Image: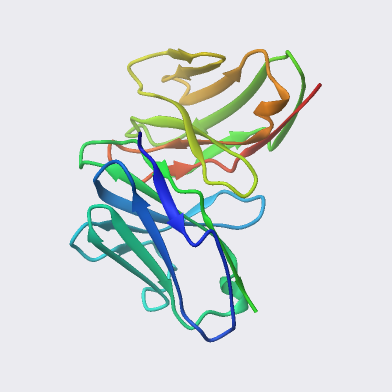
Length: 116
Length: 111
């Protein structure tokens, strides 16, 4: 149980285009989903927290207009990187938490984004 | 005060040995301490977690030791295997708040 999927697993795009990454909880309803960014050999950096049906809460320094997060259902959250630039190239990972009183976060497999 | 300090940065252990990774925190309001294992190119996977009312928790070869007064907790991997070679992250949170991650420890287990 507690499986989180991400799609696509890797994507290459041209500078200036937008890329959408999907995060799905497959066998549970995710009240809260998180989006992280990870640079090579570094720790996970939280970008934003999203609760189903409400606006995402972004961490300090994360551009809201650049990283659009939507959590329209209890099993799906999307991260759209708008007008991507090479510096946006990174490993993006989502996690999901079941219920408002659950601490455990289950992570997806990650999406490797390369912007040319 | 929100930081979680993790050490060592890297660890080399021989097969069959014990791997020990340490973490320290400042915020006494933290009440949930998970450990995650991450293989290259994959997302982190929850290994084991502990709450402050328990000093030790064991699951198979993995044990968390928790010292509330010292604000430290550690992961022990007994009988380390080459398949355990991965990056390990400790984390802490206040109840259902966001996780604060340590900087990670890259473990290499040699046969």
